[in-house]
Image 1 (tube, rainbow, N blue to C red):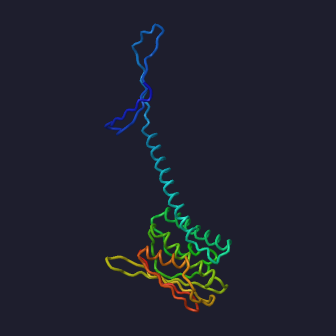
Image 2: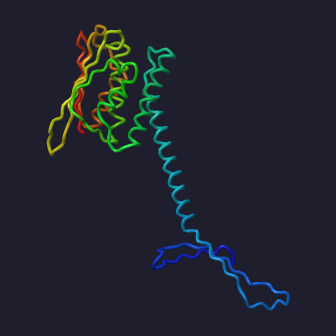
Image 3: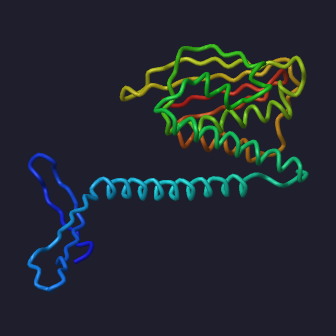
Length: 239
């Protein structure tokens, strides 16, 4: 008998799993009455194999989700009126903020709003970003969505707004508000100053749709005001 699996729950050791090998001992006169039995305790090995299989399955699942997200971003990034270089830079910027947000969300349960805001804006725009508000912790399930909102605002500021000129500045202020059923919301104002003259866009692009759609998915609202002195965005979302 080779590799026969046996399970047993020991009073002091708990459940264990063994592979049992058994064979008759051979003597020259072929009249042996002895049997050699080997017990191989594979409990830890099985547990390790199960953990590895779980990790592999979880990795595959996350890779499928990530690929679906990448595909959605690529399909929804507008190509009309763009050069290949412009499309590439826009797509890579959105993918970069998505991956960084995924890393943040996976590393801890909550993330500080100001840290997430600066990470979403990126360099060198974060140097000209002025923040003012109480400490706010964002749950890991909302990190990606909020990152995408601020990234799109920053991308717009680089192309057309305050970050498109050397003296432009962005002021972001926020406060906490008590809502119905004891839900707390954060009201955030994104105000651009000293930038290029702002005009109302002729059409709603993917970036604007993403900002509105993502905030609605969070259960919040966004109001964009295209003031000549700079864009003002009023964002309200539950935390």
